[in-house]
Length: 128
Image (cartoon, rainbow, N blue to C red; front, top):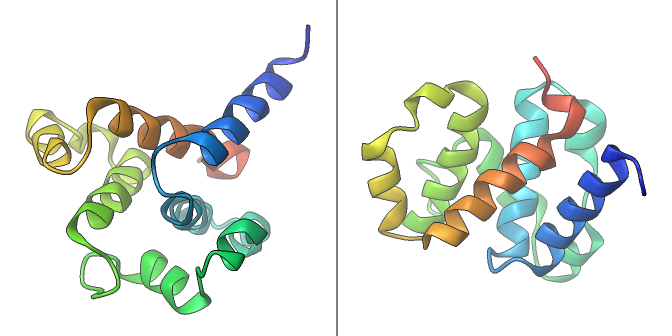
């Protein structure tokens, strides 16, 4: 039986690699949350898979700095980024109305995947 950390890491890896939520979007979420936490190490890491897939530093910066106004993101992507951001900054703000907005773009399973990834992807760097 592996440690809790090992099992959590494996779950995170599976969620990141196999989930139906776009891999590049999850990478931006991870970097956004690490940046919010002031973790220069984790916010500076990049997934080689997403870089090979076309994710660039300009898009990452837009996701971290101003995703709600950036033309680089579709409305659904903005909602995912906002969901992750609010989970870190203001979890009480994720209410019934917020979930109704998420449901316009994501299934319940996808929303749960984004939430779980945001929580686990943040790792210890996001502990305030």
